[in-house]
Image (cartoon, rainbow, N blue to C red; front, side, top):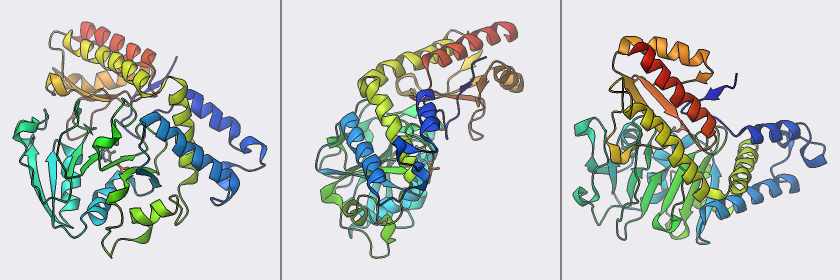
Length: 360
Ligand SMILES: *Cc1c(COP(=O)(O)O)cnc(C)c1O
């Protein structure tokens, strides 16, 4: 039986990447060392880092006036580090609140500045994206922050907000690399690696150069984006193995046609699950408004919550793992990142149909 892992993160990685890493584990390209054992200052790792950055730049079309940083701390550390690096003497920042991760980013930023919540979907349990027309942006804000895909609530922006001259900052932890984006619309993009990039341990930062050099004096040196940018993310030891793995994933994505090709597949994959929900005559329910349903994380409930345990047990017996929903939402959640093959999503949709017929 083929096993498919629907975990929200750390999440599935491409099988080809895992097998390549396995083959190269003890001895990378005949250099006699594992990537884990190399000096981060040696020529071998230098090549791994340079290739990873070049491949990411090609994949995302990152303009030359943007720096790429491979840092640590997870996206959650950068909830604090973003105001520390970007406030630049300003005292407030604008935040859009579309769910759990937005809320956490707001709470953390409040330790450093006045957070103005310029739009929120809390009134309807974070089931939609507030239309841009209703956002009350402030000209004196240091930046505007939003979360492109709410991993827990399953709400995703399918547009990039127009915010004028104030830099746009985006947490793309759970949908980066899932579709082409225009990086030049952003001041800063950040993403924890463990959903759609590679193993946990790296936080990717893509930042426009003119926003650097404004860190608060109390910012730890290893988290000063300007200092790290000036030192190829190597002011201290970077997460070397994670960067190597991310680099393999970038090559895998390039080999499959890049982000436009991923988007086509991701649309088809998400449709399979949403169709299974919609065609179940109310057996399954999506809590999210139709026009902002995530392609990456699909929460759904069963009409009878007493069946949840049976659904989880039976799905697991059928090789479909980690479908339990987040405790704050309940029900199920299927995370179908880039590395989830369409066959896995087909298996899930078929299982959902069978389960509804047998238990409806
Ligand atoms: C997972 C996640 C985070 C937190 O990532 P950590 O690496 O655990 O800090 C933040 N934002 C979003 C959108 C996420 O999905």
